Image (cartoon, rainbow, N blue to C red; front, top):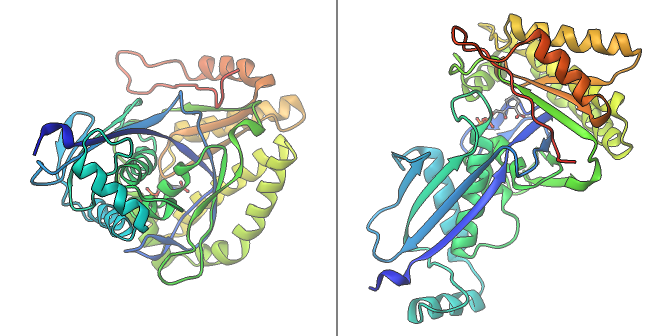
Length: 359
Ligand code: 2P0
């Protein structure tokens, strides 16, 4: 078979930051959450993953390179994702199958879709440090799901494919403000992400990413969730009673461009997640002293302004996402730089600020 019969696709996907957090699964294998969650996707010219996938009848196996290093494709979530894409590709409508035959017969076809039986070589890169405690799995798996879907001609709802790689990845399938609905069905068909607000809706919103530690966390998110589901009664209350209300209020605040309400909800939800981590047995400590100093700085800033002009949210690690709007961005960044100076030669600690959108 000629080398030119291969099909190649390159796509990108953004990092997302959870405002109302996902914490706890109702199904480990299908990655179905106990509660719905809400996130904002960063602008794609900032933190993103880029994936190139090539399918060819000449390949004898699937292969994966992550930031230039070859990785095993046997990892169970990667296998689940690949299997799901190929399963859907095999069910493509007749007109797609005819196009697929065109690809095989005519390598110059405009409609270059790969048959699901072809093996793929995948190269995925992040434009940010992968080991820096930022959620690279979300953008990485979202990008992989989207790229493979384009390659094999899978249409329709794709976030359910990304979810098989990592729960939060389904939210990186969209820009703007995204809700991942927990769903009711046992097979996860209704546990999908939807865009609730487009990217362009709130251009004044800013987020600074403060990398407090680039060390690998002691308790992975998956393990932490498992432990919280098994031992925290607060988690059960949060999933069923508190999150539905938080979600409703957060979406209303975004729609109204109500930064004080949005920011307050983000801080409360973040603190609730870390309260659940403490309520977990044995307890999980994701925040450190620097995280808490950042929280204090944000509260002091708001107090000095006599209104909420900044907020924070923390995931399963000590790194902070500081929320604000264009009006306060440079003043707040100046304060952050003053109290948390950039990385020095004898310290691993550094702080990075990025606007959510460009002006
Ligand atoms: C979130 N986190 O909503 C929450 C907030 C961390 C804290 O989603 O097991 O890597 O792959 O589904 O998606 C991190 O968990 O976990 C996460 P899996 P994931 O963003």
